[in-house]
Length: 139
Length: 139
Length: 139
Length: 139
Image (cartoon, rainbow over all chains, first blue to last red):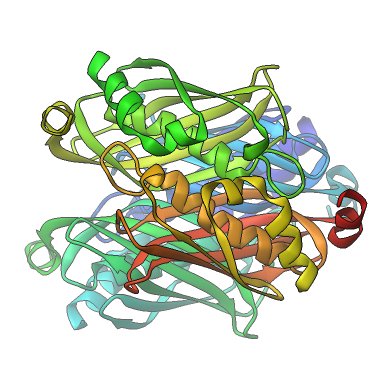
């Protein structure tokens, strides 16, 4: 799992730009976190839906790539439950199913207080390309 | 429509942080754009799904708030069609239906080349709160 | 819970037509089942997506109406994992969140063999109307 | 297109059981219809969500199989806009995008009065298997 974590930590520019950090990576699972800052808020002073999505999507991307093959998102759904404007938030992605071509993942977005903020579900198309080979070729 | 555009232009911190600009606002419709930069890329050097979602979500937020009442997103779905790594991208949201409580919107994300990159659909809960009143009270 | 079960058992004509039976109802939860018959198959001899959806949707409807207020579905997503052509299938809906206006539910569709066939997620709008009053007035 | 229409007309047992008829089939498009009957209603006397889904899903299945290769649904989303309890309803599916492996389709469900009842979006995985070969082998 070390190269998967290293790959995302060093290569995903948008996650770094937004401020998302990887907490934990396992086969088919990943947990990430974000400390809410001013730049994450929308017009009505709560965390922007795009931030909650990006957090869940990042956990989903790491979890679905954790098997070693490149997995690309083809479809995602998010439902928003509760809005917050401060504190640290987490997204944890878990694998629901996987076959050679497709994988389905869910991710819950929670606040440090324990409250559920959003539920996310995503599907990936799994390529034959090996993530580690690709990573070695570009770093 | 002027105060709706001004409201989002001046108040939405995440849209500004990501670099999204409003192109046009009409009743039930909105178009936004983003010039892809290095910080929008993911680990495999294409635009991050969170950026495409945030762009579509922003057009959706503006379109759904264009009637004057505060509308909050409750659910969104995005399907990814094609990946790009440079150029300007657009999202245009259009109202599909609206009743006093709920509204449904679709948004297409396109590249400056005309290619369709993603399709988005979102639902809002429409509050009684008037956006303009709220805006006057905070600016 | 008795009148909720009785209400759906006696009033939902499509569920009866398809052959779906209620297994169990609790606050915010419901389990239903269906024995696959010839008329549930699609053109390529596997269970029709509409049947899997209808099964999950029925569990979702019962679970979301179990609190006593009329709840109407506004949005649902289903992902298909595995196809079957015989045996008994189940859908179990569980409440993810609920506020006075909206509720979110998930439902897993499983085969008697234990295999996961589909995952479903739905959102309801909760009306003020009380289900029992309505039921008394029509039966 | 003739064998595609014939294939679905003669082979899809659930569509026939529910009473859905094919109106028109073209490359990447299909239109189907249903006359609402008592057995299509739910507990609160309106058309069951499973019926609206099945109608849209059928148009989607035909449209996505119209290119000649077997296409299987992997994910679908439906949003419900308006409820009806009588009359004829239609679903028309249109292709949004297609590559060798995946296809995205939308379908609008409308009432004979012209009102929009639901919007549906679905994704298929496109197999190498040719529908016509398969059809010849089973009829």
